[in-house]
Image: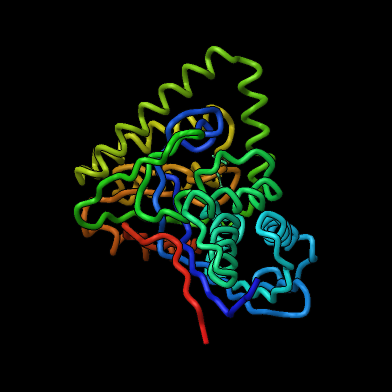
Length: 312
Ligand code: PMV
């Protein structure tokens, strides 16, 4: 199979509502955001993967990416003789989908290089090979939103529902500076579920309803109403033990600075917080948060999903 030099770029993501419960079948709401991973592939004598992120770390960090390329090579019967280079401006372990974004951009770049012409569903399917390697039992929400772009309602086993966004919407994202391990937190929630399956089932149903309502409010531009749902969702996430004193402190700080609502985003245990503020207030809130030593930025949506192209 002929291979050519190709590049793909995938966005990062925020989960707006429904993380963790999505692993147990609830609807969750997520959006692609503007920080990106870029993957370049070119023909080579053997499979060789390098990353600006993992440069100083063990080759084990690259094993999910290797698994993705090998799975594609097996399925489409080609030799994985590719030189892959990954560069990213997404902080690793921040709950912003760094691994999913990498897997999606990698799959898309290989697809373009080898003229596989993979659909979005297929890009997600192969990205999941790497995601499983990274954190065991992923729901698939992260690679789906990185591939699709925009905002989506997602539930495992169903077609993602794009959320119409007439005009742009703004979120504040604050990174706590603490990395965490998604797999460990997902396992922790599974143990909580096994302790009280009926109660947990009720919570999952309620969080699924909350996500559907959150999507309606997001679509309608009712960011104040959405903020109140973020607060409610944070209370539930805190109740199942995935928030931390640092994340609670950031949530309280953002509310005290005038946000309508705030919650952890992604697996929790560290990572990032997402918040909504009345229009125009972000400009005042971001410097206040940055002055306390946290990385904070405005994420404006919608952002397009993965794209790839051939390079000369
Ligand atoms: O790895 P993160 O922080 O992007 O979290 C993923 C969201 C979870 O719901 C916790 C896990 C999943 O696979 O849905």
